[in-house]
Picture 1: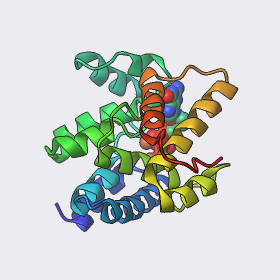
Picture 2 (picture 1 turned 180 degrees about the vertical axis):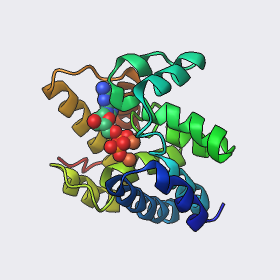
Picture 3 (picture 1 turned 90 degrees about the vertical axis):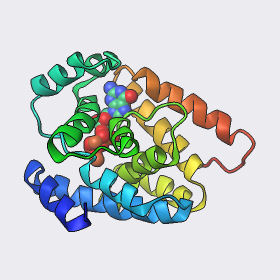
Length: 194
Ligand code: DGI
Ligand code: FE
Ligand code: FE
């Protein structure tokens, strides 16, 4: 599917703000794909559709998750998590995307997971640092991403975990596994930053 057709398909499902965010994630994901040598069309499509389910009803998304053989923690760890797995399901059913790598990157884009492949990492990071994001700490992660993608992902995971902890919210187990896994990967590298 070409870029403009994909954008036309996702647009009616998003607010203007979320559409602008999606354009930013797409730009960043393609840039990171080129940097890491993975397929830029795959990164582009994953980015365009990553928040496809963002505005579906919580009940619809919970219903989808309940019916699949997926980690039921997605239902119990905060409603913000629902749109990622539900989105992967709906992008397949309604848009017809069958590329399992794209669907997996969408599935894990909010929480991350242990042993992320390059496409999963790129979408996770692009979602966090796309140019329209303005939350505290994002510039530092952006700068680090220019030098080392794995280090930037550790920072993004750490920021999210600390953010949740400060609000007394539980942290989805796979987010902690992602953090542990990435820390192990970068153990022998320096300049984690932050
Ligand atoms: O959909 P976006 O806003 O573009 O970004 P996203 O899919 O990364 O969702 C961000 C939200 O998800 C933010 O409110 C924090 C929340 N979140 C991320 N990881 C976890 C989490 N919430 C819980 N409860 N547990 C997590 O591990
Ligand atoms: Fe999202
Ligand atoms: Fe997003």
